[in-house]
Each structure stands twice: as C-alpha cells, then as structure tokens.
Image 1 (tube, rainbow, N blue to C red):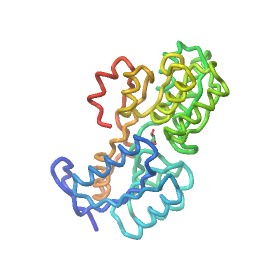
Image 2: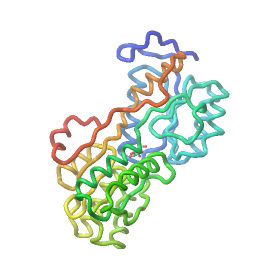
Image 3: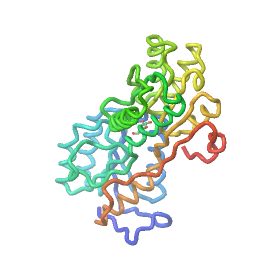
Length: 304
Ligand code: AHR
C-alpha cells in the first residue's frame, strides 16, 4: 500500500496509508496487556491500519500470523517472539517478500540480516540489576530461589544470564532451586508453594523473572505462614502498578523496570522503515529500578 510519511511527525499527523501486522504473544501478564494496549492506542492515534494477532502463547500461531501478513502485503510486520529459536524460515520469507520486520520486546536467535530492527529492553542488564538488588537486601549472604519465565524465551534466558553473571561477585549468595512459572501469576504461586514445601525456611530470597509471578509467590509465602518482603526478600522485573502496591504494603522489596509502552517507538520506527529511512539495529527504552522507599511517591506517576 506504500506509506507516505515525510516529514515524520507522530505527534500531530495521521498515517492512514500505513498497514502494519503485529503478531503478539498472548496475554500472560499485566505487562503484556499494557504492551498490547500501547500498540492499539498508538495505531488509533496515528490512524494506522493495524492487524493484531494473539498467538495464545503458541509459536506456530505467530508463524501463521506472519505468513498471513505476507499474503496480505502489509507494509511492516512486527512480532514479539514467544521463544528465541525456530524463526529462520519464516523470517527469511518476510525478507524475500521485501517487508521490513520489527522484533518488538523479545529478541529472536537469528542472523542480523533476517530482521530490520529490535525495539526492546536489555534483559541481561535487567537480570544483573535484579541480582544487585538481591545482594543488597540480603547483605550478600543467603539462599535464593528463582521463578523463571517461559522456557526458551529471550527474557528468561537473558535475565537468568545476567543474574548468574552478577552472582559471581557475591560468593555468599547461592541459588537453591529454579522453577518455571511461565510469567503467569497463578503459576508463580503454585511453583513458590512447591519450593516452600521442598526448601522451607532455608529460602532467604526469591528472584521472580516478572512481577506477576512475584505477586503469586507473595500469596504462597503468606499461606505458608511467612511474611513476604521480611522473612523472604523478593525482587522481580517489570514495574507494573500492582508491584508498586505490593512494595507499599511491604511485601515486595524491589522491581526492575521493563517498559511495555512500546507503541509510539514501534510505529515511529515502522514509518521510518516504510519510508526507507535508516534506523538503529537495537532501540532500547530507558528504564529504572524501584524500591519500597519511593514506591508511594512513584505510584501515581505509573502509566501501566
Ligand atoms: O518479554 C517481556 C516479558 O514478558 C515481561 O517481563 C513479562 O511480564 C512478559 O510476559
């Protein structure tokens, strides 16, 4: 359909000529819901035609959606790959069709020439930051359990790598056990309950790879008869509103920000690509670390 968007002005102009297909993962977490909303709201604001598909956590559904975007001849395709591997073939088809491809949020383990740009967080750095917070909270001494996200996903791999890398600086900290809660609150609760049955009071800290699983873990710890945030320190990732509420209640100790509000960057980049304007290969949002002491002050400012 050929978008004409020069000069680019995403504040006041609309771009009804641009057609974008986006293959979303699903709705596993509050983060994901905020991410989807940001994409939809920005498309509406810019007047862009958006074909949004929900893969219900299945890679094969994302692959099908991408193939249907190619068949429709959209101007730009976006995808948040549910897992890192298994994309080479379908990404090569996108390239063959001459359609720019944006990896939004999660990355894929593919050669650089198979996509145009990735917009998303540095997951390894998030893991390092989470470990730094845990080391501070436990004074460098203690036993940690990890609630991991979706196995094989970029944030699960990156956050795990960053956490382990930083742990080497703290010989007094050890990881007792890791379980996957799939980035889902109910699964975080289930796995935390099982970890407590196995390790009981020897758990000093929980690193939950997202806030939803931390919120589930908080319930499991309370049901076990311990005080989350006090008896067991908890650090998680995302910085959704519910995490701030849990910090204000003293139940979550810290959250590392992972910004889901990627809609504006996504469409701005899509417009650049549709107009053959060069963009950086990896666009990273700016993100912070939040603790209990500033949670009440920050909460009213949170947008997700
Ligand atoms: O890919 C980003 C991760 O996916 C978020 O941390 C998590 O909450 C989401 O489901």
